[in-house]
Length: 238
Length: 329
Image 1 (cartoon, chains in turn orange, cyan):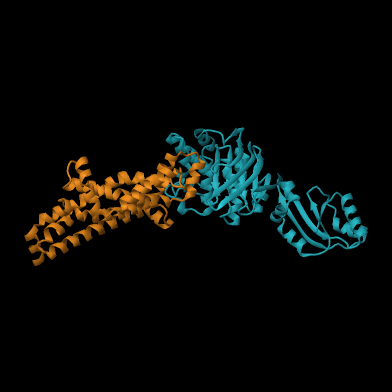
Image 2: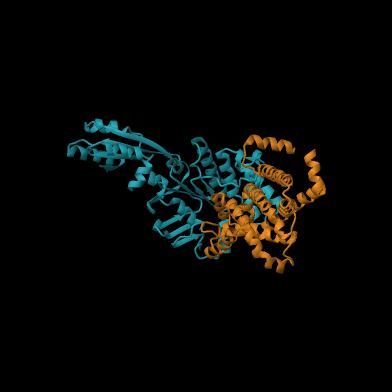
């Protein structure tokens, strides 16, 4: 009781509520935009691979190269490097909007690799069967690869979201918000250890929530499970 | 009609060139159940994939109803593929779709109206005997049921041809028999020409009308099943078709005769008659009959008498009684 009142005394309950909200929206919005770019890129990487549905070696190598470069730059350095680009595209290099821009650029190549590995798990035989039926490359992507990889894609999205949440803690450096910013820019200078630990605890809770909900969703959508579970699910549905 | 003309397929990699198919000539008449048999690694899976150009041959022609698939445009190739169904050893069903949705899949690819697709799927599931599994997922089915779904799916676009790549190799003997019976029925009632790739004799024996034996990238023997099976000529065909007989022949010395009964031979007890007439005792090393296309075909291996004149007499007797035979060493 004593601890809580002291914390809220310093920052206010509202301060933490805003922190949680900003962390959530930085994370989910950035991940969503990162998927808009990363999902097609990941599929492109998989499809144009030597053993893919439509091998295009030069394109595969070029995209793979860019993805690798972006993935090898530490996020904090990438942020600094992206300041001019953010100013040009978003109109500002500080605040939540700029932070989302930087998170998207950092996360998209990561997402692309996650998607690529999920889609590669789809059995080649199934793709071959689709080809034998006269499916076009686009039909194979939309009707075979993505639906068949769905459970794995969801698991990948959970991992990506948690990774983005980790990155989002650096928001304080460009005056954006969230729990990370509270811990780094507000609590650390005054050495408020308890505030830092409360931020950590809240982030742990958020990560757990994302993880559990995501895994549940992945399991629920996966049809490759035992007959008993299916019967149960179908009778539930009826 | 499917014709393969001087077909070759090589795989080139840094390690060197691997020849999978070499100068293949095949003609698959409409209405046939054409078996392609060979040991694993002989090139038979590559061969069947060349028929619908899942594998592009390095040289040669693939003629489907006179059209050379290696020359047609991409769009036309996709159209032609829709007229050639295919089933696989591992079934290759879409795990995230129900049985019904799997059967509808090829119909979706050509934008068949929903009601029409549903009706067609129901009809096909009835054909393969799985109406009650329409809303099940593949993971809930047995291997035989999965292959039935795959067959229904392959037939969705009413193909003229059906390619079967080791379709029964992952199934137990009883299930194999029921799948083969279904394929035979499809051939006879729907008139679908079937190409069967297999390493199992009994598959060819039970449903095929024609057979080609493939070994080390080449067709070594082909013809009507009744001809090839009653008298396989190439070494590899003999090993595939009459393996015990070959083992018996190899493991015993002396000169031997292989007698071939093709179902037309009279009911005369030929060996007894031979012994009584010529006064020679013959030793029977091996005897077996096979049922092909409703006719009994038999092989028997006997040892020839040591004396040349008696051996000649035995051969003369068999010839006079219309029993075909080959000398085996």
